[in-house]
Image (tube, rainbow, N blue to C red):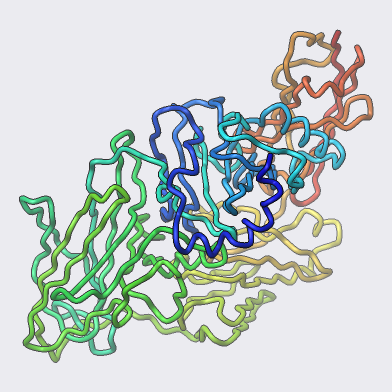
Length: 562
């Protein structure tokens, strides 16, 4: 490939190039089927923005995945969770494309990565091939689509990243999706933000009633307000080919024609993505499962998606003045939905105050905090919280009620338990668990140091000590002990653990390591006989599975193959 000789120059010059022009005809659609989206770029997910397009694969796995442009495979990452099986291709113009949740790779890539996996004796692996090891032609089939990792169903996750590995909206590069439908507005909220601010006689957040208009826009009931206020909106987009509730492309707001706010879902960095919890009303989301995007920017919000901000998006309503606050939501195809909110400035002396609860546990966001009682301690580092907060904390015997999940945590806090009353033998099976809404324990990664166990978390809630004394279960799926399985293409085994969860597994045949793919959503281990590492007629299979507290099950079986 001639471009290889120029790749160094182009990679370093690409960031400058991309400031002036995005190549709209450089990247091709990686699936040669009519495109439909299960997810859009910048879509709001749990604690992060969606970094690409989720392309539907006709509700099945195994569709050919094509390279969008020539380049070389610069990274292969295989993990049980997250992206599952993922390929990264670096292109001569400095951009990188990413293909995730794959079922398998093309033969030359599969051969390359299998060698690495067997050398490491691990299914999970991350490698960075050189520019000459796995060169790729434009439109070359590089993989087949799948459902690996954290995928909720068969699809291809596709990204385009710039020279600094920042995800960019692939639709800006000419990937076309049919869309003639305007975004949908589900709800609009108003937030009294200033110290003396109020809306309709209250300092509390309020949902506004929206009235559909003949032109497709909405008009809210008139509100009476005074002081500094902000607004929030719940909105989605749907394209022509699919009913999925996807993210929008742009949100703008103005008051009496003056621009106050604009958010553009075009590019972000992974370093900032968790600040999504500052874009949304986090407490409303955890209680109602609806993400309200705030149309104002608070001091602790550094997101780069904003432009044309005036007064950080807030509106200062004056007594006796009238305003029309307008929100315009746009999808990438240019379809728009408009909401207009009439406001009358009216000062009131008596207002319903905010429902703020004070406790003895007060945390200043810019200072570290430490609480301790009954053998349990909590450490909250500086800047773990976005704003100062009163926390509802209750220390009980081996149980901690640490507020509730209505305040976002940006960086890990630490919870510690004194386990000195337990014997060394009992401690082996003891762990720290978070309690779900039903009160059932979920394993939280536990660090054991003598008499003190700790865990790190970014979620408020209830935590306790729990014990797991039961080892994992291992069950063969497509074979029996002593069976001839010459016609089998693979070897399948179910593994599961009722409490602390699977930590590790290892499989051998006749003492030699064999690769087994772990699909956690199905609790399934699979070995592909095409690996050609099992060559004997009589084979002794041994699988060792360990849970997160060290309980181990050893499964042994004999099978025969010709």
